[in-house]
Amino acid sequence: MINYIVSVAIIGSVAAIFCLGVNVSWGWVGQLDLAFYAYVALGAYFVSVLELAPAVKQQNLNSSYILGLNWPFIPAVLGATALGAAGAFIVGAIALRRLRGDYIAIITASTALALAAVLSQDSSLFGGYIGLYGLPQPFNTSLHLGPRPYSYFYLGMCLVCLALVYVILEALYRSPFGRSLRAIREDDVAAAAFGRKLYWLRLRAYALGGGVGAFGGALLANYLGAWNPSSWNLIEVTLLLSAVVVGGRANSRGVIIGAVLVLSVIPEVTRLVPIVGGNADIGPAIGNILAGLLIVAVLRFRPSGLLRERRTVHTGPAVSEGITPQHRPGGAQEGVGV
Amino acid sequence: MCSAAPQSDDILVVSGLVKHFGGIHAVDGCDFRIPVGSLVGLIGPNGAGKSTVLELVSGSYKPDRGTIVFAGEEIQGLEPNEVFDRGIARCFQIAREWPQLTVLENLLIASPVGGRDTISFGLFRRRRARALEREQRERALEILEKYRLYVVRNEFAFTLSGGQKRLLEFARIAMARPRLALLDEPMAGVNPVLQAEIERGIGELMAAGATVLLIEHNLGFVERLCHQVIIMAQGKVLAAGLMKDLRDNELVQEAYLGSVPGVS
Image (cartoon, rainbow over all chains, first blue to last red; front, top):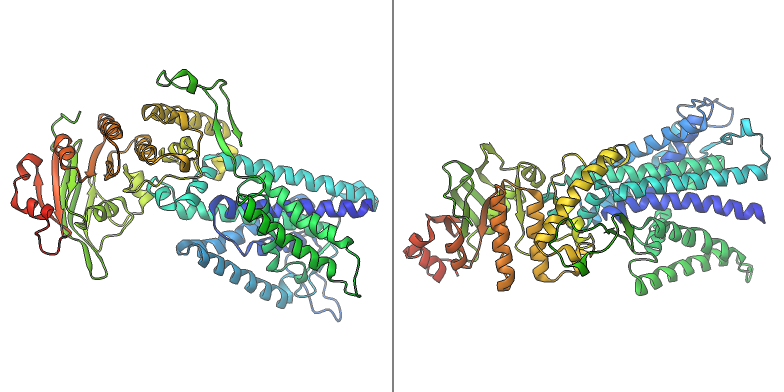
């Protein structure tokens, strides 16, 4: 049972990283990115080919892969993250130059479908349908942990990575960069009129989100030990978007809560539904229904999500004597409040 | 305020400006000059092309023909952010605040960028970023106090009243420290108390060194404040000069009274 809970927690924390990545382009900038899971897949594929030894042509096995550099875990993950972000940058450079709104969604969805078709059919890039397998367990050549302690270790590592992503994204959200992105989301005409470079800001945000997705993908591939086309699907991104809607767009804490609820709690709880009439799909089907009902309920009763976007609150004193004392709050800190 | 006589140098020179939308000739060969340090009123009936001229100068629209020279540099065809970087800021006819940003954040967005809104600046130069942020925040708070918006500095901008949103537009322009401010009907739908605030705001903009090009239908206001007026109808400049001289001009009266063909 404990192994199962740890496994669910690992998947949940990686899913939370994915949702934080989706939140950058969708929550901060307001652009719908349906190619997000393709960057997750790129991260997973690239970390695999960076960590694995060079491909050996085997009899009766018509697959191979590029690179095979035998890199250790940390450089491989950083490399995969950078390559995933680069992939997002290239797609974004095309999709974001002239297109807006629904058209960006169409282009990104097409990109994800095209990439899935190419990577599953071309066996020379990432092993085609067979995919990549046999990834080493990160750090375990020196730690020599058994399966259960190692799963605890991996969970701890995923939680540290989630915390790291959260801290970095929160710093960026509050920085002038994040503020400019939110201004673009609210009114891009006014943002441009006040000097914001719409294209470059949107593109940087898109690549950042893609990089976060690739980072999560690299962690997931290392946990699974293998990655192939059945590991990712265009539909996955709709689940991530649902989790962001439930948790609260542009609120990182809300997004993590949404990810845990929609991507971990509901699917796992509905596994416990007994099989009725020999139909093993009843649990997942009820899970999908519950997720759908949760989204409808959130949109109906709390459209901003469980945790709405926070205001950056200035609590410092007035800079002159121009206001009345009752309007002058105490303290001299700037913080974030709800 | 505005008592200083216009100087001889022109900060903005518009020549042969043309903008058509399909068969509509919104701006049809428009020429005018704005002296540096002056307050110029751009007036004319609805549909005269005044707002389109402002959109063209600010880079939101690209002209079909003609040149716009700002401080000696041709700027037609530049993107709005590039126009802003050269020192031109605008307010919109209908207030366009960033609704889900606080009032204070609305001002911080309007401060000149200077390469601060990048990922690297947000992550790796945090000490410098914090110092700059503090400096900008203090300036923004000063401006908010002047415009009586300090009290609502932490409120989302969508919660402001119509008049407060109009003041916020002004505060944003003050924050931008422009060399040329383009104001599109700043008095529209504003009560007399707020009108006085806005009048004071225009004076402060000019005292800070800005030249102002103002679209306005309130002719008394224009006559009282503006050094010069430019009168447009049917996409062309009909006349330019002092309002008191132009008030009796037949073309002007026809344009405002609606007897110019095609002008309602």
